[in-house]
Length: 198
Image 1: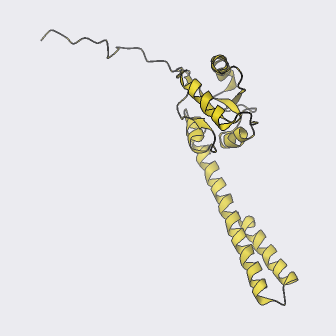
Image 2 (image 1 turned 90 degrees about the horizontal axis):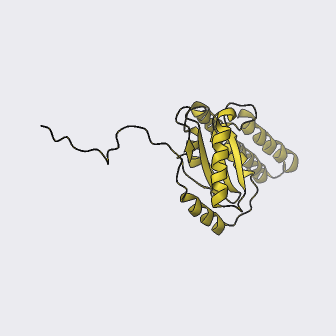
Image 3 (image 1 turned 135 degrees about the vertical axis):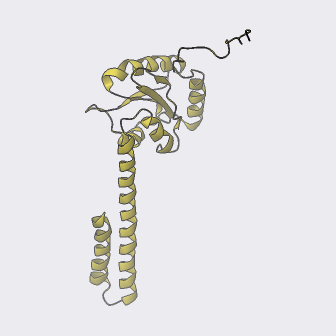
């Protein structure tokens, strides 16, 4: 961060001294521009480091991907922080985002546990939108998985194939699928009968 501030400032000072040493106004302007660019770059680096620190705190926790896709995805992606499929025993989940790149399924958890869950969701999605490309991204502890703080950048690299109007149509179709979230066993409150004994 210090280098990002000092570097442009030094370049501005050197450029001002070498190119405009006879013109005081231009020299001062070159130095000011160098300082301002340095401060701007420093703030960008600071923001990225703070974002990465925030992601490292929630990485590995159930629902971390939902928090990232809700807050960090660029405009043009339609998604929710609720998973579309979940394994109640392991808390592994699959999230869905729809954008210009088609449908992206994001599996949260180790690949050995989420591969089947993601494949089931991919098959269901392909039945509803058969001509739309489906990309599966794994976020987890595996060496070939995407790290949580790199998820936004990975999704930005998905090749755009749909128009904005097609994205809306695909998203509306997929909304009809609902979510594959199991209901806990127990008494159904809608079927419970009041006790007649007093």
